[in-house]
Image 1 (tube, helix red, strand yellow):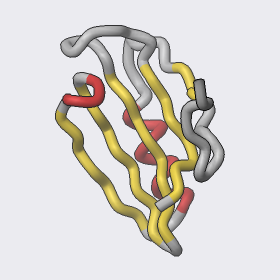
Image 2 (cartoon, one colour):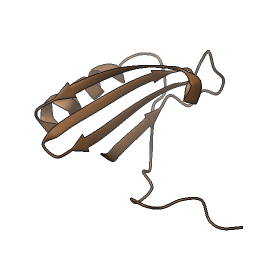
Image 3 (cartoon, helix red, strand yellow):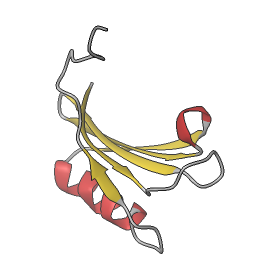
Image 4 (cartoon, one colour):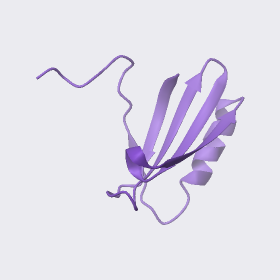
Length: 82
């Protein structure tokens, strides 16, 4: 599965943080809506087309939050050795 996009609402903390991820796997598109950071709860959506997936993403990004698109790391990229 390849992550294509990641949006974050710009808020820190388990109660305030929200993330939306767009991923693809073969011909299937996946959207994850996560509340509460890495340990939070997620809701998953599957779509047959990129357009349908982006429609869901746009709907999830509506509201009072200031959403920021975060850059995805290239496949296989990890933290720099230190």
